[in-house]
Image (cartoon, rainbow, N blue to C red; front, side, top):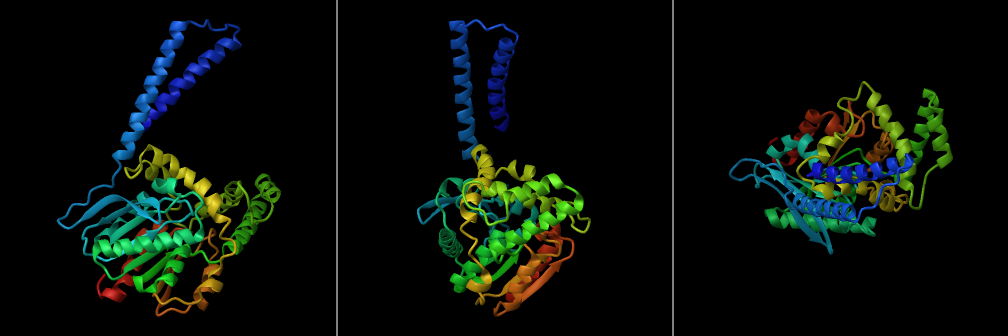
Length: 384
């Protein structure tokens, strides 16, 4: 399907290039009415085929089957607060506890990434991925989203899962932006959650950006990358507002991600974006929106988060908390997470360092991460 899309654009580009080359050579192409009509017909036919391919790609999405009498593996379109959005549901036993994974972003989709990286959890949980409004398959529902809208939809999704699977409570797992969202959901409705696990913990968004920016300046100076350093200086210090926030934050996050990628202490660094975007969960439009969410939703929502600080808003939770933190995380400064953990009051709280991880222990050290998740689960069920 993606090949058909490329062929369509390739055909149009080749036609245009041939016309331009002839003009450059002084050979103005003769305009023949039959040829023009033929070209219009061909382009129209290819456009029709493309439209059919796009529609079919959106209608035939799915998630790989899990065999078993009581297994579940499906994508569902749901609607909360007037916003249509998508979830993936995967597990070997529908009677198992529910684990809702909150992706990073805002605007990020990790339906496929979670399936690939954390598939072992499907033997112990029903793992639910959520394309939040403005991300991936739910991109179209993300217009004018606010921080409170994400909380409202998260609570609605929680209630939906509790009702659909006949549970009293579910588990939450949040990474990066999702870690902040998880804390606020647990604060808002503690009676709905057995426990909260977070990784890449975000605490104070404005201070995070300031620290990230300063670290990137330091790294570019030390490495002699003065071109990038000058670009960062020209952009100015965060916070940023307006329509180009993503493109001002991306350069210094890129510096930090490159540094983590080069760090020999970090195992399996980085996302497998090509693998994820080619996964069957995404149709052609979803693949495009995979990137649109990262750029546009992030731009619109992130500037709303600068005033938020968990140390001020949520010093206590009535839900057990397990923080799984990469020792070498440069994206979400670990000192902020440590400060929050120290002041946080909760019925149970625990902290685990992942010595060979950066921002994504669930990717960098998957086996160890899964073991910690199952240990946390055993505190409440007695079994791993």
